[in-house]
Length: 330
Image 1: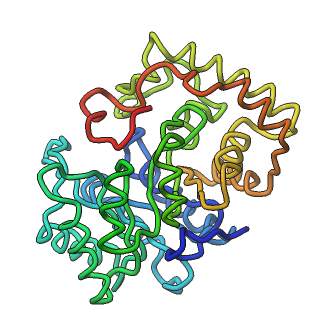
Image 2: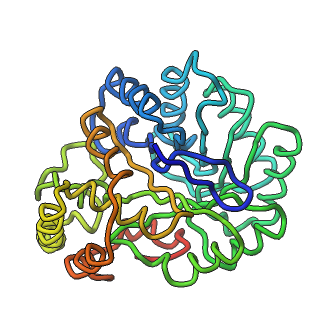
Image 3: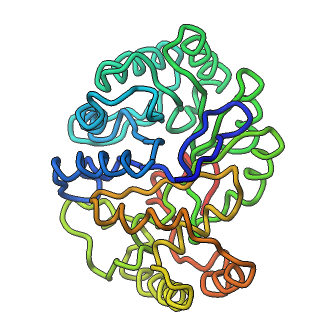
């Protein structure tokens, strides 16, 4: 497993990270034993970056990871934790909370659930419009100074917010959606990150499974949030799957799977980018891992761009209610 360093100040991590959100029911029913086995398989394969959020199933994801990581050398893996999204007992979202006192409260609960004395990268999940980012980051800086957090991260914020946060404390990385279907980050955000020496951890590299090569129209089961995602809707999914078929032809010529090609494309956009894969099973993890060894030539990249041109996807990347909280659109 290759390693990449997150920005000028962040940690060295595996060139592929594991996003654990899907292990907590957001895409439908999950198997706890298989989830834990998948985490173990990732660690054994050299994956060191594991991403979670304290609001994933109201703490379930952190408790699951605590079980999966129990007994492991704490320095052998890097925990990235998002915080600040309020939830209700009906699983409804209540918006972001970036108040300094809330930051410390969320952190205390995460440390306890995860069974650790520090978080490696701590980041607000979304910008709280009611709280200046300087105040939120200032509270994280206090936790860094106290040894409870190692590095500051951000998630889904615009270039101006990145600059303001970095002026308070160096930012290790920005976590944001980046895939062949979601390329808005290439506008002013990616150049800003590179100017400031900040890394990027890319989630949604397979478009929540849409460009995995395994999705079929109408596949979303009860409890699967993709049933409410515009890109999976009846009016958009067939068009989007046609892009996948075009990508499949490129993958077959390359001798790899569609998922491997899509992951490798993200990784090929820069040594400062680490793709996160949301594998929920050992089978899907095993398919993703070879992408780290896949070298794309200039001709390969041209063929991929022809198959899935920028802006080709139909539908927003989130339901309308969530789009306003993003740093960039699609």
